[in-house]
Image 1 (tube, rainbow, N blue to C red):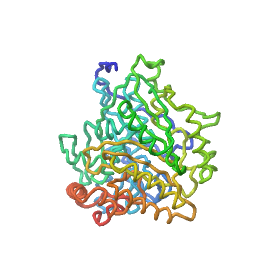
Image 2: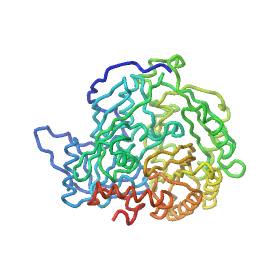
Image 3: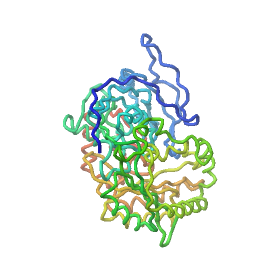
Image 4: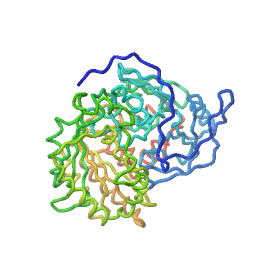
Length: 511
């Protein structure tokens, strides 16, 4: 791969984020006041109903969106003075209740999106936590850099990604996003500013990343990006006739892939149980990308405005009639059999097109209907993964609530205190909340959780809506939880920082 161009660090001017599709734009906010005018703290603002991204859980919360870091710190100070709990929301892309705070103030940092510096020589960006993944790659790709780790959508904020310690389709190779953080600044509820890195305040560093905002506010991030030789990746589609076949293909292609992910048909049964389509992707050298250097330009990365001749913004409406057991069974069968024609035939795809499949259909979450959906992601050690995941899929069939989407990934362990990753595999499952059967869905997940825990598994809080304190202690172990809450007592002795998720999964430890 060609070496990164040697360029001096340069200041990056603040610019407006790229426009979202009309139906994804947030409600208009009042313009920021002039610097000479005091901004009133909106800590007593009216309640606002917020939801998790899956729309299955909601909460009425106080809401504030600070425009400066000073205002954020002032909000924390005033909340502490008033005894009001605080939750950090990010972009609200966690599927469950991780960004909801029914008992206090929810702080929305999305206006804090300034890039302080971008150094193309070192590949390091220094930015505020409200910068989105989209804002990040738009500022760096033309210099030949792409985020080393991205989630399945470009909408989350940088602070939210660190708080969840997101992983991508390349976790088996490069780990979670936290492994690429050079340094971060954390402001505690009492106003202490801590500069944390793998060597400075390392205990706080490894707990705040993946700590879901329970230790303090991440106010600044230095992140190292990956140098890429072109604006495209080479994608090799592979088809497997069963879950076991998916595991076999995965293991065969792990040594040569930069990214590897599998779509699993979770409504198929019998010999076809868990059949799927894998995508093996590799980075290109500049001389392998026929459209280099134009492919590095932001406009060459944008997702198409239309798919099959239809505006992307309308596609969720067309998906909705198929969001039932019979419809998903038909769509999955069609997808699987159509993919067989492309097995082993590589093609080129932009970084954005490959990485952000969830962004092809704006507001796709609405296709699940008014009851919403939950995503349930399990992480299982290699030794038990095949058996546990087969049992989980079969159990959903027996309960009559199959997963409408399944995504298989390979993982490696890391050093973060509340890490969901391990030396093994994950399976993310989307469950529509069946009208009139919400309690049945929750009961089913309790049974699935028992099977995963028996297999030595863990869970991912960014996707969770169902775990109980006893589940969490079995998954992460008392020693890890004790260490985390010792840090919380040190940094947040008043117990200011919480969330609906934290109170649900940590129980008495949050009191």
